[in-house]
Figure 1 (spheres, rainbow, N blue to C red):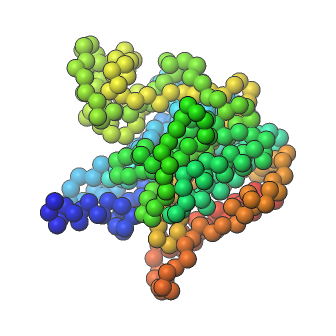
Figure 2: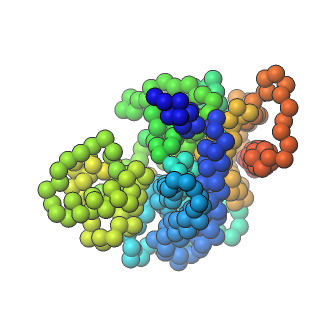
Figure 3: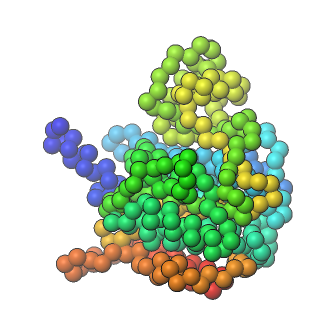
Length: 396
């Protein structure tokens, strides 16, 4: 490897200011996209229209960035906008022409992602379509997700292990008489890699095992929390609901059907690495071709999962950068609605976790640089998190 190649390799993590800037630029766009979608979550709004608005905003905003770069920079949607309502848990991004709408009092879970040069920022948020405060079990399940996310933020730090987070979030959910949904994974992210090898398991069980891992400085994680008032055993009810896929880059197969070859060619051109929704493909008769691609493992499907009908489900996801000066939460900053849970969380261990700082103690007493936008953003992010914690504690 030449010195230039070694330098380029080294700069692919958070030790490079350019990389940090791209993560934060992607985060700023996806945070604004989320705000726009939340503002449109009103009774009778079509779910497919909301998904399209989220994706369109990300495409438009990223198209205006890095136009004059020396080499072409890939940028755009890193995960298509999904809107999953009530007991539908995740990955619902309906086909064009779908007539499903949001209704009053629906619990709406919004999930989306943006990338710039392959540096990915993802976010998920839960919003209830109501004018007043959220009460009862709906408030419990959202407070459980929020408090679990706040605890996870404080435990995903260098020196801590993935199993520490798994155990903690289960304890938090139980304090609200809720459960963490099984099978939900929080992944390390790298350039053009949305689901890296280091993983945090949501629930320990014999069917799903992951390698023990320790968090390290300069890593990036998507922390993914799904809480439920049900049993947490999510189910695929209908494979035809699946519309989100990702190219399995390590797989090859000579497809038999002409329609499959045509659609796979389009996918390789437009979506060679990042997840996409079938709605974004030009060929609207792509269903059969997609099925053959999935059957031969050329595509990884993101199935629409469901909890038992009638149960309440909340979803919160945020992106965190493990910087030398501490954890920098760059997405998931949108405030929740006022919550009035039925449960009071007074467990001393949970309170101790929530009191942990997200910042690292400086070694050697180095001086803090003045006037950097990143510093201001870190301070405001921390204030937002701390404010949310105190809100949760008082309302719980």
